[in-house]
Length: 491
Image (cartoon, rainbow, N blue to C red; front, side, top):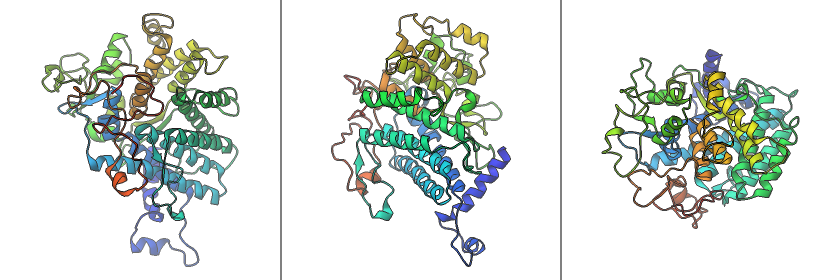
């Protein structure tokens, strides 16, 4: 399968002459004397998935930026909230490029009478739009991707408007999927043509979006939650680790998992500056979490230590390369590793929160919570006995310890999102769990939380005349809180 995957990517890149410049020889070979060259929709779906994986799970965004903001990872020796104009422009461009490929796939799916292809592409587009608005806030969406209609400067929609559009698109996609319909073809690198898993992924995203917005628009959130959870046969969701929406990389150049491409060390001699964060390591240690040796390596002294942000972080003797734990092999040292779009553990935590907060009735919050933990630990190779013992830990067990059950749900969900840094960062901003007060030295004197948002790219500010002037950017990363971020006294 991995060899096949590699060949598919090579074929895919070649076939994208539809979008990009190509050599005269290629055009001569592939141009019919009677008709224009046509690229199969499945090829463009593959390109959309590949672009999405690179955009979200590259080491720069997933480890250095969002990983640090989420309290999962850090870059020792720097440890700052870095801002580079070119990189920031590229992150924005990469995410919107992936949505453009998804839209092209939808159009080709319609031309090919393949509703499943269009539904998968619409699901991916909505998924990436959700990431974009949660990173920046207002984004061009309803008028974006309409250059052919001469929309050169698309307006910025509010976060609420984007959320409603996303939910509508996901509902539309969920109703379009047909398990006995057309095949998705070789470009489905996410589920290998399994329509049922695409349906589960689509509906699980609906739950994710609804929970995220639940403190900002509870009625709309409740409506979506009820629509999904009250109709399990029509709207199935991720329910086992076999359903996980993971993009598995072939593992041979140039198609290598992005974290490995930066920090991989086949001989075990890891030296890269990307390491684990003190917030994550402290949480795992405090609860005797069996995922600790999976998430992190012991340092050179046989201990687990994370990088601690703060005013004195560069002079802190515990923040050096010998003391700070590297990222574990499962996540950062496998060339054929995975980029996690979504896992079943998160879906159980979404259900647990919905039940615990009475966003829907009839469910068992404790059962869903414990299933979320079980899914996460099983995924990381933890056996049943260790899982049973972990569920008895004071601050893990339901109705135990000093933290509320809802706080337990939030914390366990955050832990399970390791390597999904943009998502973990969004959850930390929404819930303040775990409470992160260790701010990078660059900003520790003026801010009491990690960044609230990604800075808008300079390219948008200078080129799009519709750029919203009411957005406040303080010290690049702070200013206007996002629509669903209801925390008080945050700066």
